[in-house]
Image 1 (cartoon, helix red, strand yellow):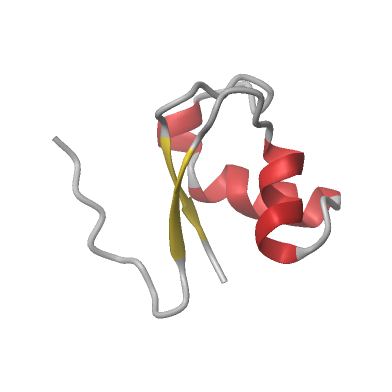
Image 2 (image 1 turned 120 degrees about the vertical axis):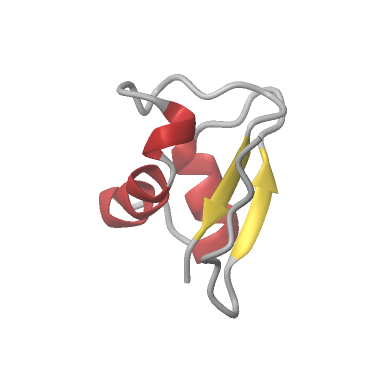
Length: 66
């Protein structure tokens, strides 16, 4: 089991829900689904998400950086 120990103050952990995508998650946390915000989430979670940022699954836990 991997336990993330490098989370910074103000960061969040989000559990993916059915129907979510990275754009929707970026809008929720940053107020905008811009490519920069989506990439910020994706690159912080590449080990969890994998090579395709369009494939996320319910119950995945994603780190949401500041």
